[in-house]
Length: 138
Figure 1: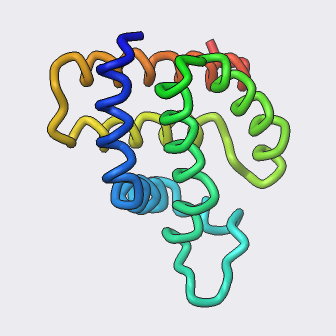
Figure 2 (figure 1 turned 60 degrees about the horizontal axis):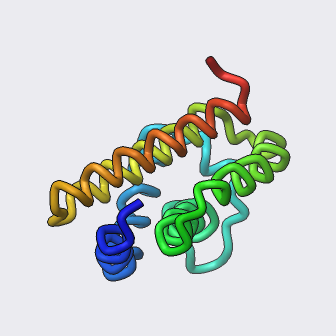
């Protein structure tokens, strides 16, 4: 991974983190309204805000960590852990896969260089491969 490209991308992701997460959470709930049932809603928080905080922001932090430390193995660890917990709360392969897809689609709306776009595609493929692997989807 090109460190300069990764660092520039991290800067963009950090600057737009909240907005990206809000858009992804809203899109997930529009696509999969059943996700709202699995959230522990708190006072003064909408389902979208809660989903953003507990899932999408965590994904964004994981993406930035992979970029900063050039450690794709973090994805395997995090998603393996998540697979052990999330299905008990109604989170399926489709939900996880869509969250990854929606996240990277949102990221590609940023003003990225061709190298940054390519890096986002590589990361998305890796994340999707791991999601498929932990959910044992071919």
